[in-house]
Image 1 (tube, protein in one colour):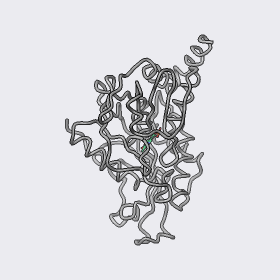
Image 2 (image 1 turned 180 degrees about the vertical axis):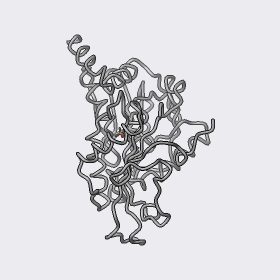
Image 3 (image 1 turned 30 degrees about the horizontal axis):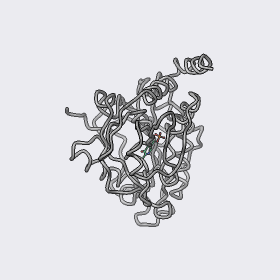
Length: 304
Ligand SMILES: Cc1ncc(COP(=O)(O)O)c(C=O)c1O
């Protein structure tokens, strides 16, 4: 299927405080971020016209930039307002929202003390991260060869563009072998996350998920933990070794783009998408939608 290249689309992009025509939202080839990866970004989704957990995303963006030693010249409140403005300008109510901040072109070298910090926000239609049919059956993950780095090696809590280099390499290798994505271990050999989402396992009525000490503690991950606990399920955050995957019954990944997606295979290990995964998929679908959110509180009350 031919996809219209992203630079040839139509609409408006919020760019350093102004709405500019989509195809005019350009930067120079001598941009620090392009050469030295001084770029941080967010991935957000709007449902029914509202960006889910917008302020948490804006806070993480500001913090990601601080971890790369720069300050975005807008407050969290201003970034929230800009995201809403960009969404409204695109005229979409269900959409993907991509704020991105980067060091500009004033200095070209490892040192970039005086570069302008830029911020842009683009919004586009992005229905499902994985093939919807495959998603329901559970996606297949390869075991990635690349590992999440030691926090002493890279600012692993930053949603920094540079940290996605090993994600693209891992995802490409997996896709070449017919998998949808890859599971990455961390520098110690513990289970970490997929290339763009966090991972959970289910055994009996208990959820197990790796402690996020060298990768993103996803906003979706935290939402899923709250939803599971609201259903009375136990959630254990701990170090998980790869051979433990043998004993888990269900597995899913979750992230803003992936939402809650069941996993049927990770390398040699198999899982059967089951009731707990299905329930959390549905609860997540409910909580993200402003018009349905109240239903969750009602079903939790009814279960008590
Ligand atoms: C590498 C990685 N891990 C985890 C996540 C999940 O984060 P969130 O739920 O905040 O989108 C993402 C997506 O942003 C990601 O790219």
